[in-house]
Image (cartoon, rainbow, N blue to C red):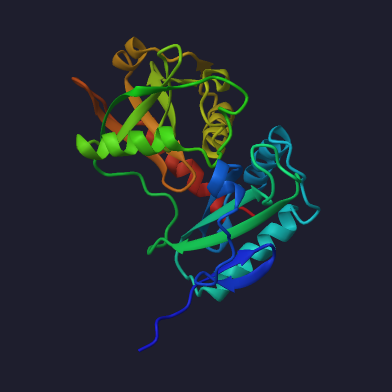
Length: 286
């Protein structure tokens, strides 16, 4: 029995994922010269797509990549929807958009023109964002500190610190790890932004602390403002974590993940459920 083919979109064209399109000279492979976005698809809707495209265009500007005219929200959404239909995805899905500088040159590229790749993955369930029933157990990844510079807020192809933190997490059987910056403050986790709650107010590392400029981070901050919840962007020291009433993580694929245990501290989940409910309200909005 033949296996069902799966497709991706390369530079606007649907192709099989088994068709080779990237050579050994690809700059994403050689130098990490790339950016990517992961978008949650819910009820055939690409959630917060405009924010994802805004972020990747900012990243392309920082990396001196040429932004093609085809990079409009309307065109990217059309390509994503075509790919979902071609792959016969009927559940919620993960969509990854990767942009990489075209091959040629060594550290100095021959051109700043780009190619792009869109992939989709069926998540196997429907229903939008679901808060985790069991809280996460987390600790800190100390081996490598993240530098604070204008690349720190971007989702680039250079993800070694997150890879090593993921290995550490797996080795000591944790659910996630905090990443610390060069000042020793918490800036994010392996794949998420960090929020803490103290006396009903939200606190999250400022972008100047070196965290990824998360799309769901932005949504949570906006929801907090709309509901008159104080939200402060700060430097997040370890003693702040120990004094918190609640800690939760955010990313666009998983939504909100609440933390139950950090070292000896046990936390409850209150605002995490509230933000999950509010995020799901976006699903029905056009």
